[in-house]
Length: 203
Image 1 (cartoon, rainbow, N blue to C red):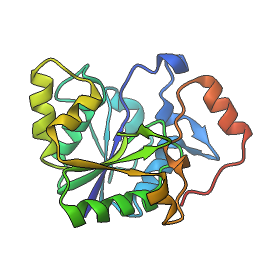
Image 2: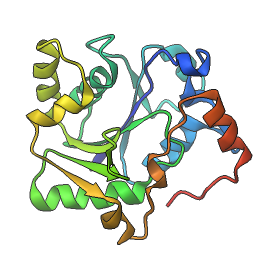
Image 3: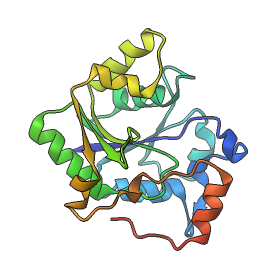
Image 4: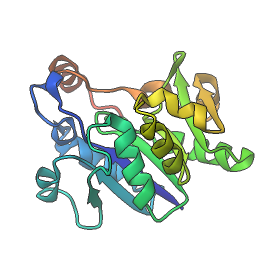
């Protein structure tokens, strides 16, 4: 089975301090939208945040809410905590600012990961690696710990410790999945543009 890990840390300065995970979109909070999509293929969902209280008020108790073991280390700190505490062997890790998560894309990556025995599979959309919509094995937590102990917490450096593969646009397109699942909300302007556009169905 698969664990879904939502990384909901960060200072959210570009959103004026407002947590992107708690933004309303199409009549529901962004995090609820993500939980629903992850729930299609994940039997465990974990939210990693440095501010649990706002989530405790709005998240179903079946969703685990945890904090970092290594505070202030960015996405790597959140990934380490989630991967260390999950019950499954593999996780679908996503950033909290992605409104169009795709369980279909995650399923394709999981099959690829299982077939070839990779430690991780990461989308490469438009030539850009999207590590925060990727799949990772539980042992990745050990690699993250080793990396953090070097004083380096750059996300892309993690790949040097893993046997991994990317999957590009064409591989997803072969399954009828377009690359919009890696869309992010970084700024208030991004959010306003999203609200003005029609809500897209998630594949």
